[in-house]
Amino acid sequence: MSSRRRYTSPIHAGARFVAQRGLLKPLVWRLATVTVLGRENLAGLTGPFVMVSNHSSHLDAPLLMGSLPPKLSRYVAAGAAADYFFDVWWRKGLTALFFNAFPVDRTGLRGKRGMATSLLDDGVPLLLFPEGTRSRTGEMGNFKPGAAALCISRDVPCLPVGIVGASDAMPRGASWPHKGRPPVYVVFGQPMRPEDGEKAADFSDRIAKEVRSLVDYGMDYREQVQAGGRPRPMLPPDAGSGIA
Image 1 (cartoon, rainbow, N blue to C red):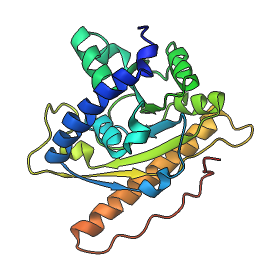
Image 2 (cartoon, rainbow, N blue to C red; image 1 turned 45 degrees about the vertical axis):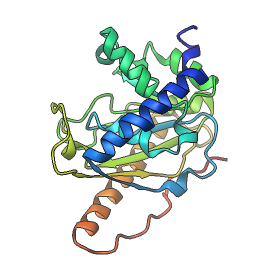
Image 3 (tube, one colour; image 1 turned 90 degrees about the horizontal axis):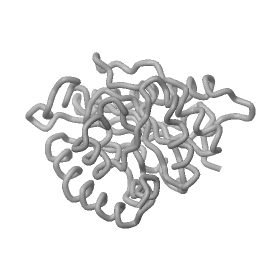
Image 4 (cartoon, rainbow, N blue to C red; image 1 turned 90 degrees about the vertical axis):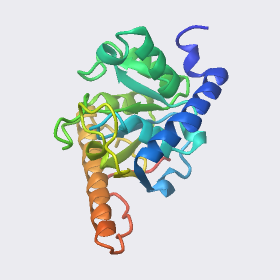
């Protein structure tokens, strides 16, 4: 089987389902108190899409994969740093098993964009972290335009997601989550599409703005829960969205 065909292989998808839903998700959900918000925004999402999120912890990919409905996560391929996750055979094998991973260049998909476009053409949804690396402070960094460029060139929607608490639960440099099941929030936004004639840099800025708003909502939700109050409902994003 060619390396490209494994991303769409039902056999590999079945093994990955067992690894993700039978091993990884139960472990992560046991080590952290995970709350998933905005699931209603996934209604009607089909076909290939590009899921993007802020990135501050090795928990991020497991949280995102585990929070998606199985019908959406079945073939999702996660972009993983080529210089880290694909440098030794065992790490490459594990990322392939758990995340259907493919190599990306940290500078913004240069040299690896061919693989990403091919996967989208094959109907494979992608998970990308546009910051390029985990935040050292937990604060969201600038987005590189590679993910937005893929959405424009392949005419697929972007699914923005905000993650809150992952860097507190398992910060950069930690090999295991902190004790006590720290709270983590995964907030799905509405799928977004580029406007007519919109450039990748501008669409990337809109995506980043939406992810920031989802992170802000997650932080506000966490504060309300900790204070014993009633969290405010999610509001539709003011950015152009929709999956039509």
